[in-house]
Length: 218
Image (cartoon, rainbow, N blue to C red; front, side):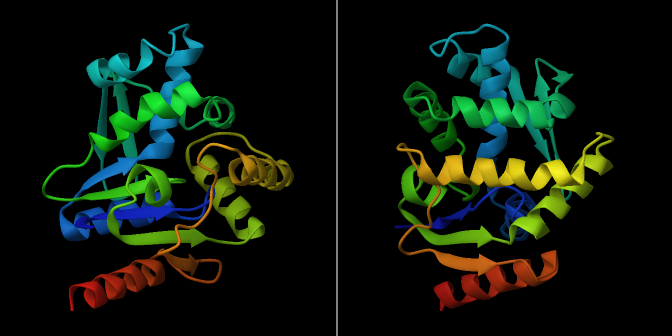
């Protein structure tokens, strides 16, 4: 087991990204937003690159800048964050993630984010597939209604027009696809701690994970 790897898995809009950024800052760890990496993959795929060309293009051209509230993604210096954060790219990323080639190609890229100082990895199969040796594994969930509201506010803050009534069935459809796919389905790792954040504030969740870290170190 590796004590300096923390995985945070869970469905869309459960709060994984915010938790990962805060815990990474708290521990001074590197961070991996694997969902965003899949969106980058979909972005390149939609430009016409093949599965074989995409991993090298990601390594060569893509850079990430993380802060407390968000992440900026640059493609050869050009900010493509708003494109990646759109619901359209999210749908394409979900569709392309079922391809065995996609998951195989991204596995090495994802693992390359681990450095000796430590890593917080946020995704859907971080604790089950990508970093099964992680010492602390979190599975973060919340009700459909809460997650739809969070997504609605997130997209509004990004200046994107969205219909709240459309989000719930979209999230339900994405959940079903993630949980029933053959490759790396969305399930909690057997040794993960399950946290339902439906009635918790972001700080409540952060403090909960900090307490888990203290127990592990004891």
